[in-house]
Image 1 (tube, rainbow, N blue to C red):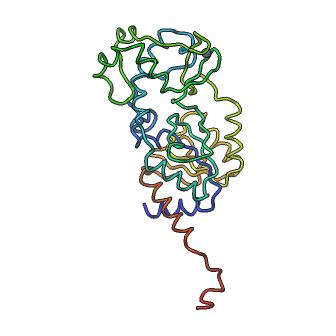
Image 2: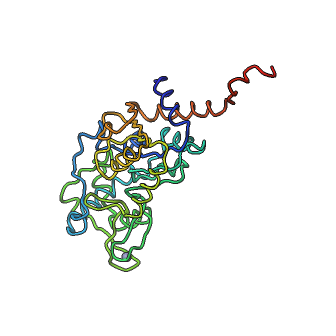
Image 3: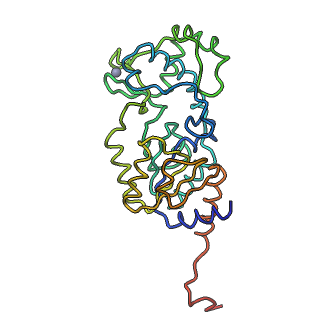
Length: 291
Ligand SMILES: [Zn+2]
């Protein structure tokens, strides 16, 4: 791994790095990666925006499962990978972070200039009036509305992707916006079939245009929502480096691809660049002068 870290450090040490991160960065925090190597066994097809907004039963099923799955997310803490990214940023090497993750772990690790492309699961928006509230508050309201739910489903809650029998879902009570009284609540994340707000995408493209290097961390780049930034970087001549476990759909654009666990590689990279920055460079030709 030393040679890999050396090669990466050589590229990152120049600064101006924009990070594009995906689910692979958060798996070591206990958040399942449904598209990565460990995610092949996903049991449920993802909720689409259309089903969520048009089908009361689909919405009830979503909230019932999400009510249980939320505990995995709420418990999750930043891992060594997130912390290493924050260290690289404090060292002045990272200009900004585009993340496809909705877990908020980059900011929890101390990073700034984070664009959360697909929103945040810990925020809730009313589709009626646009009022935003915290998931914590919604969690409290859902617990109050469903006092017996936990006891009934306690047996089926290993990883946040919860199987629920139809009768358990049928008994689940959803809640509405208290601000406009009756508006439909939705987690403030971008669902399948929904587009990312244009201003947010523009902010990401601006980051990519200013980048000296685009560093992809833990994304298989399966969906165009993230892959387009790799395509744009390549078009602008911004070198792309991809660190991911397994191949990605952006490998053809990359100057360097690294297959390694992020929780080990990134701390080593942060150590190496910090050590390099601490060594004063002696201009050639002056070596030995004054000694
Ligand atoms: Zn409302």
